[in-house]
Length: 184
Image 1 (cartoon, rainbow, N blue to C red):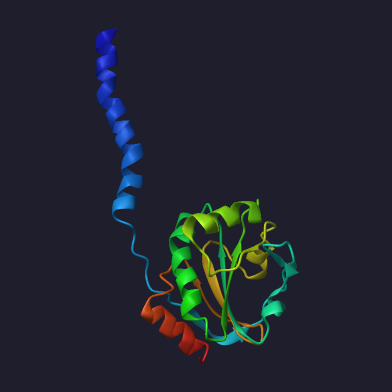
Image 2 (tube, helix red, strand yellow; image 1 turned 90 degrees about the vertical axis):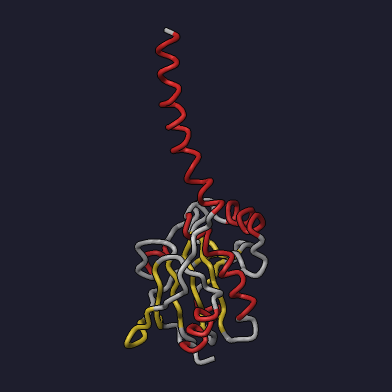
């Protein structure tokens, strides 16, 4: 019996290593996200209407931001790549503060504001407004199949371009590209 227990020790050590090692590596060597590369369409695309809410529960549409460029980021608190890019979006909001570009991060978390507010607090995301769509209608309306996805919407409410996947939105080349596309 004791011999059998002793033979299980190496197996338990290997299992523990497989469980503990990846998060430790992630902490010690955080992944480097690529610069944002919005794919610009040949012609602007019309968007289907959808509603989402702000942190006070007020129902909104993208028309609420009409006459400004909108960088819509669809994300969730449980999405690891989303978590990695949110601090960069938060910093991008500061970098674009004097531009006519509004960042609208829409969380698709089922619990809505209840999970997003503590997430923002934990990561210090104090430059981004909270927007939620627990119904996930934004996914269908924008034709999104995976998150994070970011869509640049023009002043006219039509889609200019998009990027699927996480990015380092506050890198100088990312900021330059966004402002060039938006003519800022």
